[in-house]
Amino acid sequence: MLRRKLLLTLGSLVLLLVVVTAAAVWMLQIVLHDVDHVLNHAAVLVEDVGRLGQTITEVEVELYELELGKARHLDSLIEGVERLRNLVQRLGEHYVIKGEASRPRYDRIQTLLPQFEEHIGSLATTRDTRLAEFHTREALTVSVAIRREALALGEAAHAHAREESRSLVSRFRWLVLGLSIIFLLAIDVAVLVLWRTAAMILRPVDRLIEATQELAAEHFDHRVAMDQKDEFDQLGLAYNRLAEQLQATSSTRWRSWPRWPGRSTTSSTTPSPSSSCN
Image (cartoon, rainbow, N blue to C red; front, top):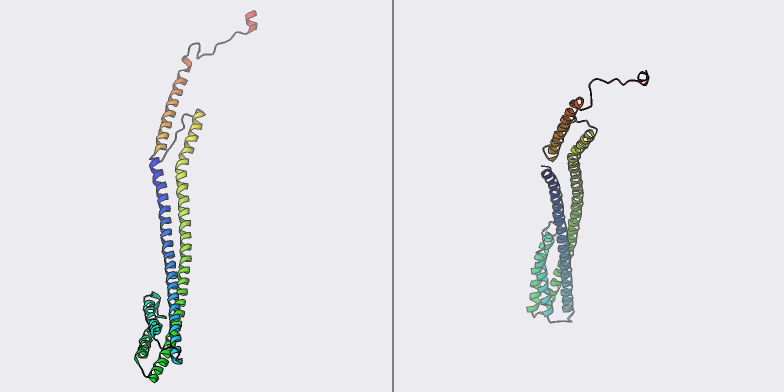
């Protein structure tokens, strides 16, 4: 019984500590995964916004060269517009773009992009110099508007990433505080359980030590009272039986003391030396 009690008590304590530790590790993993997710998405978004601005710059350089008459081949310009379209589509896949601050900027870029492509397409097909100059100026105007919206989109993305980072840091702090309180409570419970286990063992041991000392002092009428149903209870019963046997043996010897040979119940008078001389 005592072994079973110890196993149940210590097993429950170990199980409690394992569950608390596993829960703490699981919650920390969730927070760290969210932090990694935010950092990775923020880095990718910032990189895509930077590429978008760089692509717009390259397209604008091509347009300025067309306006100045330094270039007439539109292959690099068309490739730049294609890269610009792919970057805008890629930006739309980020969850940050769906926020309240970023979504209007992205929608504005999607509205301007077809106009920009239309002017570039007209540049590629028109033969009229004046019409080509008109489309070049309009394409530059639209590209400036796209750049402006891209810069605003980048600022909104940065602000969203900072807000999410602050939220995660605050969440992490509260999680650490909560885990600290939980671990303190678990330690308190462990101390109480160990104290109760020690009392369950030491209390009957103290009683048995006291009973052994009484037995050594020949106080055979002393008995041990055990209130727990385990091995200590069996040991106490064995001690009580031993004390009863010793008490019975002692009483028997005491009653048989006067009947020993050479002993008398009446005291004998020893003659004094003076009377023997007379």
